Image (cartoon, rainbow, N blue to C red; front, side, top):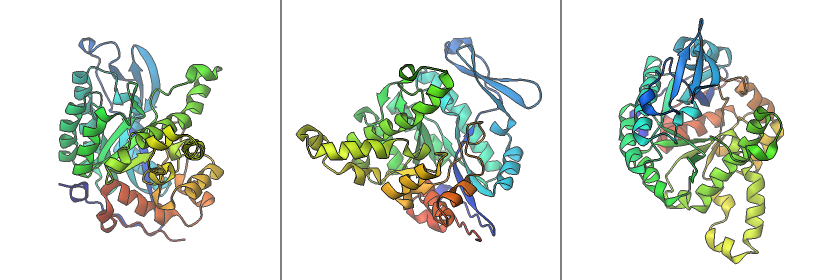
Length: 352
């Protein structure tokens, strides 16, 4: 059954209507388990609504109940005119480096949590799951379970424990996702080059995201993924990062270097316009450039809720940057989530 057939979302709003495609979930509890190795993540509840994500015995991130509490998320959504959130795992929990059996077990926990949250408010949430991408054969089987749970797709990191996304070993995953009508959301994970920036680690991490997502996108382009699987629906987080800058150079040099031209039989700009991109870039001029260089029909709204480094009031940011784009972004999100026919499923009516 296609994703459009599984997920029935009929949302109407008389005021500003925002579909936020970039939000993350952490279960309220993931228990420690020494048998699953030192990098097994846990969620430890603290005082009140606070919790900590612990990886390898070290605190990875402080979180609160917004990561798992449906009512609190709905309250925050109403305050920002968000009619629909797309729920996806905290990227660190994708755990592409775990033993495949452990990753599959964690995926069951994560996918069940997201499916339950989406079922609690089906007109306000849809979900993306996770798969054991480090074991493509297992991942293909897991995609069947993702579909059975009613999730609309999966989130993957920008690489699979060092394996580039354009590697042919991952093609069975793309083939299965395309056949099932499941969307793919690509999010930076363990970016490269942190040691080359220096200074405070948080600065390096923030600065490295745009290049990391651009390299993942270029891997998909060079690997021919978007050509081989033309109905595959891939969303690049953070506006595709530095992709437009990278493509300018690659496209120009392609005409000068025969080996590059041979590896890129299609203009990479044309291939890049097959991706979707979210608006979570924090800067209006950057967002305008994404739309100008790529395709306004592939722009969707994202915030990175509920984390501290997020785009507050993403709808207001979009309207101040690109007036009149809200309805268009709702349609774009509908198409990415459910496919072409889903335009009949999702109605975003904004009064301006």
